Length: 151
View 1 (cartoon, helix red, strand yellow):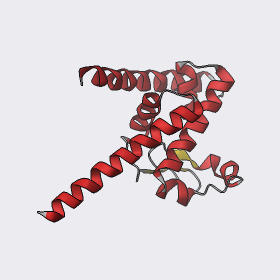
View 2 (tube, rainbow, N blue to C red; view 1 turned 45 degrees about the vertical axis):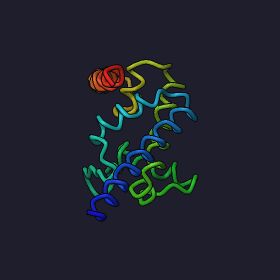
View 3 (cartoon, one colour; view 1 turned 90 degrees about the vertical axis):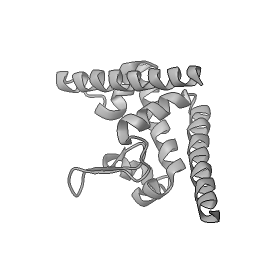
View 4 (cartoon, helix red, strand yellow; view 1 turned 135 degrees about the vertical axis):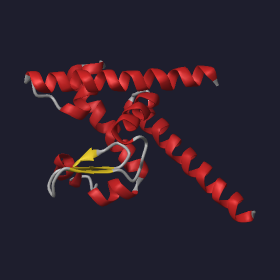
């Protein structure tokens, strides 16, 4: 029985810490923390150990699925793929950083949210990907908000 109690405390502490990271990153980047949660859910189903490997050079890590194309830029700040994979808060903050860049570039809108996943290319296929992704995140976001009003 004591093992179960310890295990449950660990799980609740871990969940609270992740929640604190979403709240802190949202506060620091002026982004609704529930929007960050929605992006994380769309990217990884909230799995901090998620890894999406496309090839040896193209992959994404963690809850916010930070893509390898960003690693050289992030290395200037001492952020490594290993840290993004092992440090859930760093992963969440890094995702918030990239979403904030999209908002700064295109304003706070669903196409900017789509740019988090599909980039800024003006090609029609990328625009369609941005729109699709933005709609998916919007649906998740609204579900998160609805769950909060129920509880």
